[in-house]
Image 1 (tube, protein in one colour):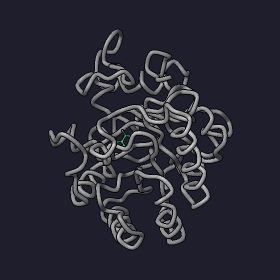
Image 2 (cartoon, helix red, strand yellow):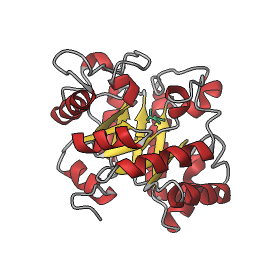
Image 3 (cartoon, protein in one colour):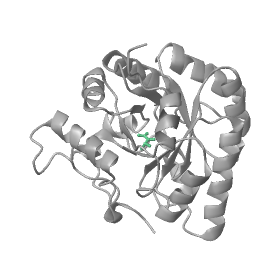
Length: 266
Ligand code: KIV
């Protein structure tokens, strides 16, 4: 293993030491290399590739073959960062289906962790995968694969009942064996509480500054994605090129400068 290679163990140490974790999406080898050199700890091969690479309207049509292809491309550019890859829509509807598809994402796509969107209903799946040696990252809050059920891309957990449910789901998934959690678009206070209650690293996007780390979609950091409240274009001001912008993102996450209050939700 490359010296300094980021592992799940290292991310746990960072959480304990209160050292912020910088995570960014990557979809190809060239950008993966830039991320790696900038000190990004987690390269997320997100199914957001459906939107930013394929021009689709949502992540729903992304296939396992797409994910394997992009994850394998990223693996060729990345030496240090931990590679987490999304299990796409309907690839984990049952534990057995999830196990077969996660195995392909790891053996063909060279993913090191697989990410799945959903709550307690995934506990058996997380348990089975963990027992079989597949590390799992859970994903709660706004679930883009459920955009049609959720009625759009909206902040989750604003009312007390919903917030309590998200907290419960997080605990259940950690107990089932999840080794990381992505929290998307939830109020700052809820994210802070979940982060302090869990022992696994919690990576936020639109979840305020108190998570153990932050993730953004690469194109948003470079000002060519959707400009939303929780994103920031780092390819501006003093940054003259893409590597400088990505390094600025890493510095801003590490120092706590990003996300600022204006990037979060109450
Ligand atoms: O697909 C993706 O890029 C993601 C992040 C936005 C968390 O899941």
